[in-house]
Image (cartoon, rainbow, N blue to C red; front, side, top):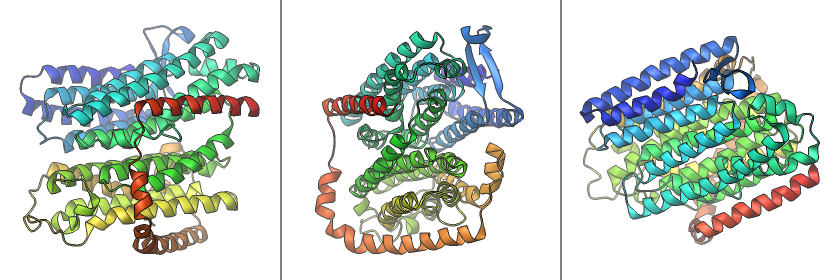
Length: 531
């Protein structure tokens, strides 16, 4: 019963909240996550034999809420449970309360529901629940700044989901159903001009969830709230943004007759460029990671909107690899902020010397994101860039160059010697925190060495890397690294002043709302013209 994948985490959340002994509750939470991961793996194995369906409430057909697990949704369910397992273990020694565990498991259940549901209205409900719970986690430590940013996050999500609700209402008026499959069938025979408005309304909400330009500006600030637990930033930047991309794929199937991929391809390119530039303008390590996520989302959007099958699979695989790598880096950033007493990149040095386990995990994650040979990012970017036209190939190489520049600047703190007075003191080893960072970093390497096998297991496709193509991409990557080092050493310091001014970009709530309305107006005109 697929419904248990949604209900059980919420029931566990209630049980842990009422459990009297918090130390025992933390152990039970880790155990429960392990059991859920085993169930998610079992579900994935079942989905390989055929789609798994459950009709909630014993209503069959279009009257009930249908849950469906195909290979894509089952893979994302596994990813969700694994990330929450890592976060639970990482937070084992934190001085949290039962409320934290309650919120964590509730958010997990809502995200799993988003991946499994076939009901369009159910998506609205689950997205709203996940937004409320995520906002509560952001405000968990009850600091003034985190309270403000958490409320902004909640209000913006409420606003964009109202656009979704209006689009869904209009779509229901046209089709009379909420089930994805039935809606797709009805849409295929409707007049294209009738679909422009619901398409624009719904896609505005999906684009906001993905963090694409121009409505992405508030997300990195939210994901990198200094006072929020590091695990929350890891979930939001590593997983919840991927949920937006997953919904984008599902609605692309629904609106296939009017889908305009070239528009989203352009949006992806522009988002990636702005994400790289804004990441370079940051000095806070969490904000740099958050903006680099936006850049990678833009790159993924480019791959998803290319017509080649290799590019599509490479993009989906990059979603998985990037989620794993970004979780490792966000968890490491939270640990570094605690150890060094600051999140300022310029004040953190010698990480690898003081904490070799964490430093190694960070290096592996960085190599995974930048696409180093034998790492997950190399496999995904190889297929993303396979058979693309020369112009897009150059654009994607430049975007990856930007990513390399960002992480060369980010990785400088791993080496050198810190000038802090306590830099020579040994760091207390919390194996729950350091071990999870290293484990997730190692997965970036495993996902590259056995990348072709993983793609075959996850998606049932036999894709192989040609030796000539691998050598070509390796040479390009080596040249990009050399160019990136030169740019970081000589060009970035000369652009410090304009980058600093750009790094202070912080849109007010009113300006965020204006950007949302402006995007909707422009998209309505563009889609209306093209469709």
